[in-house]
Image (cartoon, rainbow, N blue to C red):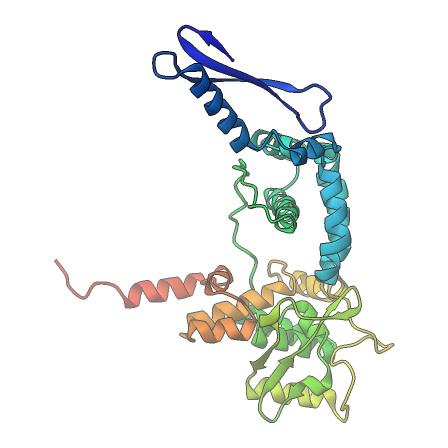
Amino acid sequence: MFLRNDRWVGRFYVDVPGQSNRMRKAIVLGLKKELTKTGARLKLLTMITAEGVNTPAHLERSLRPPKVFNDVADAWEAKRLPQLKASTQYSAPKQIAKYLRPFFGQTPLEEIKTGTVNDWIAELQGKGLEPKTIHNMWKMFRAIMNWHAQQNDEPPRKWYPNLPAENMDEQRWFTQEEIGRLVGAAKEAQFKVLFRLAGTSGLRAGELLGLHVEDLDLSRGVVRVRRSIWLGKEVTPKSRKGYRDVWIDSDTSRMIREYLGSRTSGLVFQTRNSTPLSAWNVVRQVLRPLCDQLGIPRGGLHAFRHGRVSHLQQNGAPPDFTKSQVGHSSLKTTSLYTHFSEPFKRDITERLKPSWTH
């Protein structure tokens, strides 16, 4: 401890994790006229104690190798990933290996600051990644780091990333007229029923392809969603809200009953070998060619789902009913699936025009 410009200054050294040399710190303790040397020394000791750097535990932590991102990612993949959906178990390790480990891999956790994260985002943009992909990679990075903090009873880390604006183009959705044309143009009965049910139920593609005959209560017009198909395997629905009963109209029930005939078990939609259909093959081999044939913009099976939500919303169905039918967890998500056709917008505008005139 020493005097500088009539001020007491305390100096001490701190062990730093991962570094062989200690870091020197200096603290101004107060004016000489206000503090005795003994008082200044006690104040310095109190500050050092409060900082927690003068304990055996701090020394032990400092002597350990610093924990780097790869250590955390390895632990997350070993402990947390097996608890997640099969689709995440399949894709996450590949995405981490491709987009996260090359940049953050050997970086100590304490050195990952907002600037570091923004440098990583800039690198992903430089590689031409879509904004949505960058947002998804950011969410994965944050999930891994927050899981690590939770395991160690630490508060979540905070960063302030400069994320690119996501593409605001409207999701492709099928209108009721387009769905009717697609059902009418489909040559095989299986695809007529598949497209009809997709358009009148709003089921996800995997839920449609995972339906068993036993899941149908056609006398009541109810479809029970209990599973999904992913890469040819039966898995659980996307979320807890995915387990649900979906109501369908009597014409759709009749069409399904005629299609099934005497079948009482097995998959509703299947290949010749009685295995689940592939959503990608249905889109590539059947749906896209039909769109081209009819001269309507291409869409995938998800376009039926968006179309169903839009039809319910446009016709005054209670929002909570719509949400429950499509298995959403929040109305905010349901609103993202709602679209309005130009004739509908024109009709609403004309019906609500002012009744007064100048």
